[in-house]
Structure formats: structure tokens, C-alpha cells
Image 1 (cartoon, rainbow, N blue to C red):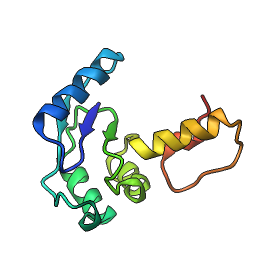
Image 2 (cartoon, rainbow, N blue to C red):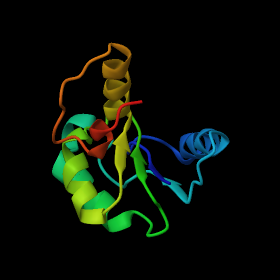
Image 3 (cartoon, one colour):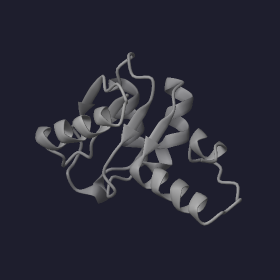
Length: 119
């Protein structure tokens, strides 16, 4: 899995995230933060798409974009199409989990293949 931290995450935070994800049984092949503005309001989904699509490792079977203030949700569908792998974000996974806990059966489109699956 490739881990992409928010631009304001320092290398230590990325290492802690990689250690946690590895401890959950995932093979982490990279953990980095993009060279983008640290002001979340200045980072557009198109910028997230451009950076991730150019920098994600070919060895990553999936990508997780962390940082709840990192505006990446609108880039998920486009990224999945471009890189041909699942893309997860912290807010997307949180919403997916909340909907599943609530027993929700609403269809959610445009935010990645995760929503095609129920836990």
C-alpha cells in the first residue's frame, strides 16, 4: 500500500502511520507527503490528483490518502481510473464505516470503489 500523508505531515508522522498500517497486516511500500501547500484551503482536488498520479509507486496495490483536512475526496474516482488501483481517504473510509454501522443502504457514487462493498 502507498500511504500519502497530508502536505503538513512531517516524516515522523508518515513513519508512525506506516508502522500502524503495517501492524494491521498491510504491506506498506511507501509513506510520504506531497510537496503541496500546507494551507488546506489552497490544495484543490485537481492538485491532489496530479501529484498522486505522478508519484504513487507502481508497487503499491492501493493508495491511502490521510489527513482529514486534506481535500482529496473529489480526486478519488479520477485517481482510481488513472492508476487502476483502489484509492482510500480518511474521510471516505470514515463515511463508509458510519453508513455501514447505521445500516444504511444508500448508493454513494463518485467517491471510489469502496462504496461498492459492504463490511
